[in-house]
Image (cartoon, rainbow, N blue to C red; front, side, top):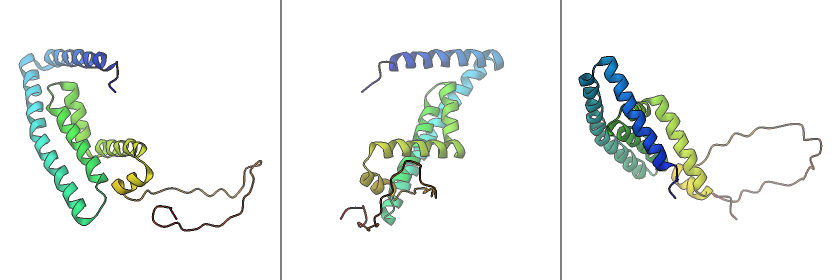
Length: 163
């Protein structure tokens, strides 16, 4: 479902890009600003191909080794997204694309994409795509004041917790 705010957001981005180009044009000259815009788009197109091939190789290597494909898929999506933003003519989208291609921002975006994907998948599907989850367990030695203690035993239910 497409948000009703999408056309308004696209218009705001378009106007912001024009204002950014005008501002950069006043700062370094219009010709230089247009050259920066064109160079960024060309770099984005070249990176689009490189990131696409890199994502495909990573995916194939993961599948060949039997590793879950999720990490390669999310890394490839973030890389392709960054290259695509850089390829779109615009200063603001170019800066956003460059940021997505830097390792710290890429790692943060990759983790965010993974979290969104895991929320939309069932636990079994997420385990198949991303591998086993790592969970932090905090032991609280003091029970809550109004907590009821229930005794029981842990039974290993197989790989996915079934019977």
